[in-house]
Image (cartoon, rainbow, N blue to C red; front, side, top):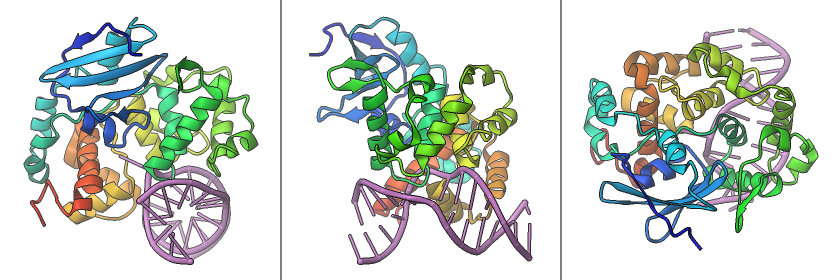
Amino acid sequence: MLHPMTLEMRIYPLDLDLTLGCGQTFRWRRAEDGSWSGPLDDRFVTMRMEGRKLLVEASPDSEGVEEALSEYLRAGDDVASIQKRLGRDPVLRRGMPPLRGLRIVKMDEWECLASYILATFSNIPRIAKMIEGVARTYGENIVDDVYSFPRAQALSRASAADLGRLGLGYRAAYISETCRALRGKSLQRLKGLSYETLRNELMGFPGVGEKVADCVCLFGFGRLEAFPIDVWVARSLKRLYGVEGSYARLRRFASERFGEFAGYAQEYLYYNERVLAANDVCAFEGTR
DNA sequence: GCCCAGGAGTGTG
DNA sequence: CACACTCATGGG
């Protein structure tokens, strides 16, 4: 059922399990054979690594998929130099090498904003379920049982009560009000703003606080200096650096410590805390 | 049954 | 600026 044509791409280093499974994005699924599938814009994409090659198949066709995937996986990021910069921090230096293939993704701005509004005070399996429900109900069918994430305009015809029936809880009102706020506007107009200004603009939408705004800056607008702080990252900062306190305080710490690539540091710490620490292993301070 | 989650909004000191 | 409280609900 997959399109027979296979694209060969070079995006390296790239670890699909780390990049698509670390919780920064919610719609990719891993198959038994290690391939990953999910919707990308209006295409359904399946990909897997073969050595240093990324093999890609797309349905219903491959028009523009190579360019889209290059942007999505941030092919232009020089991970080696990013890790070199972050390696000034002795804590990070030790644990980063195994995470070389973890790349920050560059999601569609609107899909990212809506996804992270839904993500508030929830957990990843449930977030994925909410997003699939929204896509299935209001998105366009791509192929088989796969649906695109609906544009704000398509989603705006849903009432908060409609969305509530999809299990969104109090997030339903945030989504529907944010859709309304976006009527006749586009997030694209925010692309040129500085990180701080963009962050403040995003926080103007209902349901968007500091954390969600930072996620959207990082994963939706590609601002690598953004450092979203959720409970896991806060826990990591306390455990590895002994720093705790308000969001503003932790954010300032990250900015001073990690600088322009704080977003990558954040994802390393998040992954380490959520996945490795769960198994009582820490890449940044040795096995406990 | 219990605890927790990629928090935000509002009010108060 | 920092804290306290409330908001709803499914997953593990």
